[in-house]
Length: 450
Image (cartoon, rainbow, N blue to C red; front, side, top):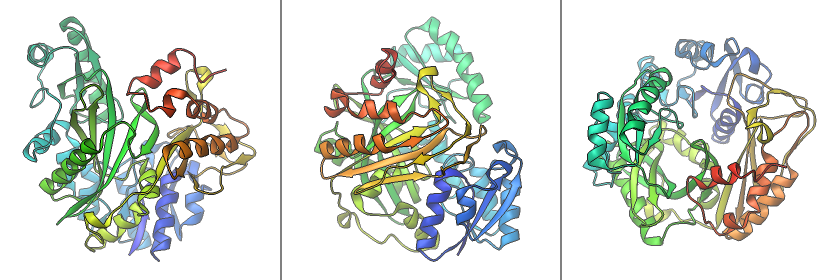
């Protein structure tokens, strides 16, 4: 296999390293801004695919396929973001006679539509949040549906992701106002303005289950806690969740596997759930048909290289282990360090950097593309690095997190490392006393900034 990595940054570096471990040749693609990037230098071959903006490079499927043809690549790994969950890209890769490292286009399309995914979940016997069975045509239909669901409700984009196209509303008047705004936002972001309604769970945990499938069978690799969020973007993730019972874990992971079997899922994926913090009930919300940013936490507690398993399955190999063969040990936590200024409402901070000090030492992993005297381009996501630590238990993992974040330093631009270090020392974090709204409330109170 000769693998083209259709991505950039830390995930491109991560995939290239996994491929090299398996003896697989690699091809990097890059924009003008990334000509000297780490992933470009690590790959066996690199191809320029366009100008710096992603819309003219990493999001141009034809340019990526042309690079694959030019270099003799026979497989494409999309990473996360960019084209990773576009069914049309997976179909184009397959149509070019190449292997797409991920599920097929039909599965991506089916599970990428939030309404269709809910229908699949119900067919598999997986609990779903009470809401509309399909999209709602307009604001009047939304108001009528909300009377059945009950306020407050969450208005969501059927084709959505990343927190866009979502509004929480408390009454009919607010719903009418929000419908047009959210639908327009979804149309611009995803090319589809279809909206649907769900009951809003006010004190909810966001817990996701890591799955692997080979089209014939599927397994889970336990769950991750993703409740510490800002503007519905994950900030800190843990494996496993400290906020659910063993019985809930068993039921939730079984549900995730049932969903995968229902669709004959292939490759790595994540089944996401909301857990009512008061009742313990859990509800399916969506499935991500790709590798996740937070996958290293699962790798540290299971000892399984998820990207390597993706590559093996894509090559036609069956899963190498049964569910009984997967165990977990200890606790892992990931902190997303971004080039953002917490003192200025998390404004992105592109620009040149000087000295870079990355944390290391026992049981510390730092996934990054950042190098000394480099440049943070203004065209892409602000993620600089993922600081991931393992401990024999959660207390040890948090202590190691504080040490690791103390070591993280980038000269020249503000980052969120200091805020994350403060967060890791908060008593309520140590007690796992949080839900999806807790971090924003803490930030609104001015915590974490000097």
